[in-house]
Structures are given as C-alpha cells and as structure tokens.
Length: 487
Image 1 (cartoon, helix red, strand yellow):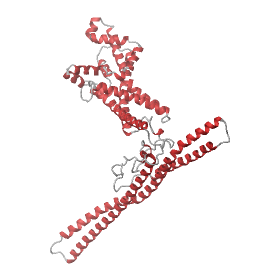
Image 2 (tube, one colour; image 1 turned 180 degrees about the horizontal axis):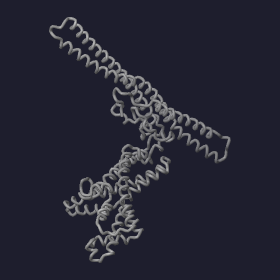
Image 3 (cartoon, helix red, strand yellow; image 1 turned 60 degrees about the vertical axis):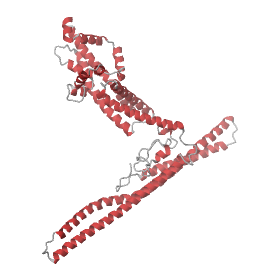
Image 4 (cartoon, rainbow, N blue to C red; image 1 turned 180 degrees about the vertical axis):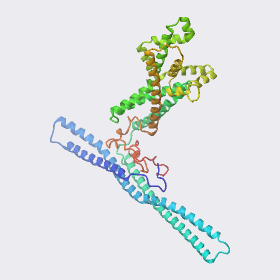
C-alpha cells in the first residue's frame, strides 16, 4: 500500500524508531554475551577436563552468535534512521496535505466567482455607464487575481508535499539497502537462508493456499455436495479444512498464542464441522424410524406395507436394530460420506436421468423458491428435512423418545447449519487475510526476529518491505514492497 497523493503520508515514526531501538539493544546484548563467553575461553586457571569442554563449547557458541551482531546492529540503525527521516518527511508533507484540502475548496469557490464576474462583464448593456463598466471590470480582475493567488499557493503546497514524499522514499531505499547488506550482501556472515529454509517457506506458502481452498470448499459443499465427483471432492476438502482448524487451535494453544477457552471453542467448531451434521442426521433418522416401527407394530403386516412401503419398513427396522456403537461408527464416517439424498441425485446423473436429477435437486436444494428450499437451507440436512416431511403425516405414533429425538434433530440442525456457515466465512476471511496461519515455520526460527519477540505486525506506512529484507517472512510496513522503483 503506497502513499495516496496529496494525502498525509502513511507511517508511524515512533513505532519504527522503537523497533530500531529494540534491535540495537539486542546487538548490545550480543556484544556483552560475546565478551562473557570470551572470558570463559580465556580462563586458563581452571584445568579440569569439564572446564576444557566448557571453554571449547563457549568458543563455538561465541563464534555463532557474534555473526548475528551485525544483523541486529545494522537493522536497528537502519530503522532508527528511517524513523527519524519519516518523522521529518511527515512534518513537511502532512501540513501541506491539510492546506491542499482547504486551498482546493477555496479555489473552486474563487473560480465560480471569477466566472460570474466574467459573465457580468459580458452581460453589460450597450448603454452601460462608464462607472458600471469600471466596476464590472474591477470585479473580474480581482476575481481572476484571487484564482491566480490560490493556484500559486496550491503549487507551493504540492511542492512541499512532493519534497516530503521524496525524502521518505529516499530514506526507505537507504534503510532497505543497509539491511540487505547483512541479509544477502557483503555482511551476511554466513547467516543467509539455507536451501532448507527456502523450502520451508515454499511449503508454508503452499499450505496457506491449500487452507484457503479447503475453506472455500467448506462453503461450496453446503450448496454443491450433490454434484457427482465435484460434490465428493468438496466434502473431502471441507473435512480436511475442519481437521486443519482443529490442529491449528491445538498448536496455537501449545505455543501459548491462545487461551484454553479459545482453543476449546476452535476445536469444538472443527469437530462440529466434521461430525455435527451426521450426528444430527442420526437423531432425525432414529426419530423417523421409531415412529414407523411403533406405528407399524400396531397394524397388520399387510396394512403396514400398504401404509409405509416395504423399503421404508426395512430401513426403519434396520435403523432401530443398530447398537449405540454402530451409530457412533456411522457418525464418525461422516467427513467423507455424502447423505442419502445427495447420493440419490448423483446416481440419477450417473445413469443419465438428468431431468429426474434436476427435478429432485430443485425440490431439495437452495436456491429458493424451490419446494422445501427454505427448510433445507435453514437446517442444511436432508435427513432432518425428510423427518420433518415424514411427521407432517397423520396417525404416526410419537412417544417421548421419538419426540425428544425429533426436537434435538430440528433445533440441532439449524444450529449446526448456522455455525458451519458462520465458521466457514470467518475461517475463509482469516485465511485470506493471513491472520489464521499455522505458524509452525513462522518467525520464531528467524535469526533476526525470534529473540525480538517474533513477527512485528504491520507498521503502516514504511514504503518498503524492510522486515522481508531482514527475515524474508514478515511485513513490517503493511505495504506490498518495492516494485519497479516505486515504494
């Protein structure tokens, strides 16, 4: 994000200078530690073998951490210098930007006045008196002079703004150049990223893209799970996205980035996305099956078949015969299994029955106003909608267990649907903005930012990706970096 012309310059000089001081203090701390380690190395009074090993280790450590001193020192100096330059640039450009707003408004008024004065001269009658002509010409001259004066003031303010903006750009380029010396230039001291570091950054980038794909799939799967092949792929990706969310929350909690409550909520939403829909569907199928079996039990076999049909009786009795363990197993298979309604429509498409499939989907899926569209979008669960339609019949036996299962399925389905839609939108927004990354290959491994407390965050206005120059991973500036000579 570059500066907007004639607006106040982006940037927080105080924040940039504070970061520079932090790096300078780290460099000083390294110098002190190197001195202490050198004293251990130089200590020859103690001759124990254990002390010999300690001196050897101290020497090796001293050499390693001394290499980092220049990186911290140069970075601190560059940021401190840039912060001061940014402050001076803003002191010059920002007042000019404020004046420009007022001057441009005044210029519009003056130009309108000048136009009116010109019209006044043109509209003078032929028999106008000399005094009238003199007054009209004087008004026109004064109005034109006011316009010229304001234009000159605007030009001066623009010159001042350009001067401040140019000073900021020059200071930024100088800061980036200084930092690059200790990152990729002559003073890198062996701290340049290795091939493995670059590989990890590539993997991290691929992961972030894949995570966004999974989050998008989680939303699309709500509407397109019926589509052959595509529906199954979307459901699998959505399930993987929920698994990623679960792992991310656990990792963040283990690293102390979030509290136990936030971790529990994040894991809960992930589990809900994986298994919530199937669990609610199981309650719906149980309620429907129980009402069928209970009602059929009070009828003759012939009457029951005539009322419900052989297929429904068979599936209902099979559902009622399932043990608790079997029900749990069926629920746990849910991340990669489509519902019965989706499978039926996909089967029609596979067999070439496109018209039947489309009609079936019309009556079952969003968008409205197709049949049952509102109910199916609200609950997001074909099994629950099927149960609701089933209980609209009369003469069904509904005992307390059936009623409870029916209530849990109906209320739970609406909750799960709302939670999944909201959570999917939030996850997608966080993934796109970069605020929900895994962070396993994050700034903690960086020689420059790890000891400084990790990623700096976005300090709006630094017209160059200075932190990328230091570590290659974090954007100090909130800008998009240096492109073709423009900051």
